[in-house]
Image 1 (spheres, rainbow, N blue to C red):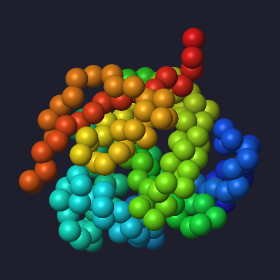
Image 2 (cartoon, one colour):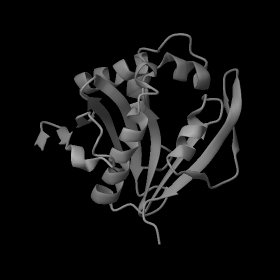
Image 3 (tube, one colour):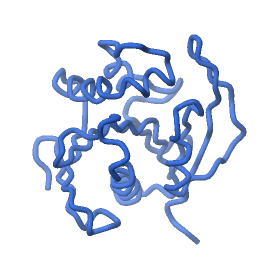
Image 4 (cartoon, rainbow, N blue to C red):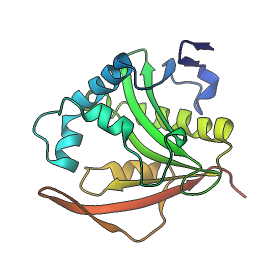
Length: 191
């Protein structure tokens, strides 16, 4: 069901039908109310911002900067940004690139679940929705992503979701933060 930029995700869209949450996806654009919605998620994610960028407070423009950022040479029409809304409220922010770095691949740039919603199964539920969105809407055969190694236990999460390292690690530096990018991928269709 679609209503003014919001898609209600039926329970059968999730891998595990016993999950008791109903979700809606809201496609974000540059409207101030969409930026405010994304900003709220970042404001509830200070631990993440501290780990990867060293922030001790949430910058006022972090959501708009994230929503506007693109890899060099990539056009804005390849980027999609969503919030996932559960019965508990706005629960996750995610952004991705379609057909990047090549055709039939979706590159998940960020899946951000505020600390207060973590360790409740929301990440697993979000990935179920995202994977189906990539397969059905974008006909993707693979998901790629990179994460910053100093970001807590996020690597364990991605491994549990079926992702494997796919490229040599690269240095990551942001101010006083020194870590590595870890590159991962997951096939959406099994041969």
